[in-house]
Amino acid sequence: MSAPLVGITGRRLPLARIRGVPEILRSAGAELHLADYARSVAAVGGLPVQLSASTEPQVLARLDALVLSGGGDIDPTRYGRPLAETDTDVDPARDEREVALYEAAREHDLPVLAICRGLQVVNVAHGGSLVADLPLHAGEPHASFTDPRDARIIRVQTVPGTRVAAWYGPRTRVNCLHHQAVDRLGEGLRVTARAVDGVVEALELPGAPVVGVQWHPEMFAGVDPCFEWLVAAAAGRESVARLA
Image (cartoon, rainbow, N blue to C red):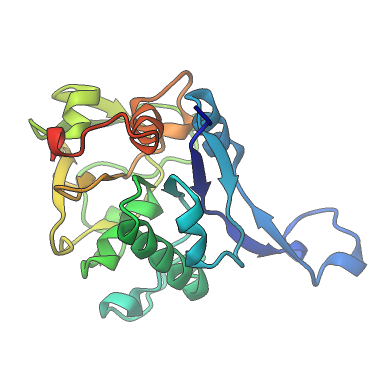
């Protein structure tokens, strides 16, 4: 049996933002895909397909699963909030592209693993909104850029009967690199894990192979169950109804 093809979103950046680029190339663009995502997919038998900013949603007809990766903040005007000083690396074109990719994945009933920003994309795609800046709302820090990227600094409680509870148990600790989070939950979505201060840390779409986590499982050493599930579901080995 061939390895499932797993599309992974990335971002397009001007080469001028990369130190040491020759002057003649500074006006060109570069596709950025963090290697941890592809490594995690390959480690569980998937074939990573890194999707460029030029990717059209039609590509989902030829893939077996989708990873919506992390990155900058979603343009808040998509969900009715004005741009704030705390919104960083806003890229409306990326928002539009990733919402379209997500909707195409749903049309083809493909498994979707949405990570950090990806979870927020899913929530907004379902009509939800986001907290502008967690330090102003949360009871503990949710973004640490001084600890190692795999440091499990946030305590999370999962909801019984969900995928994340089956994978991680009733309680776990995760890494945390997000300053925004779910505010109004998108239509049809279910919260499946929260931090101890109540911040949404995971969600699922009941009856469908869609899981979103605010942490970064691709940064953990070894094999994470998020990716095991994704590739198993892509290969048709996971029953959606079993944990819907």
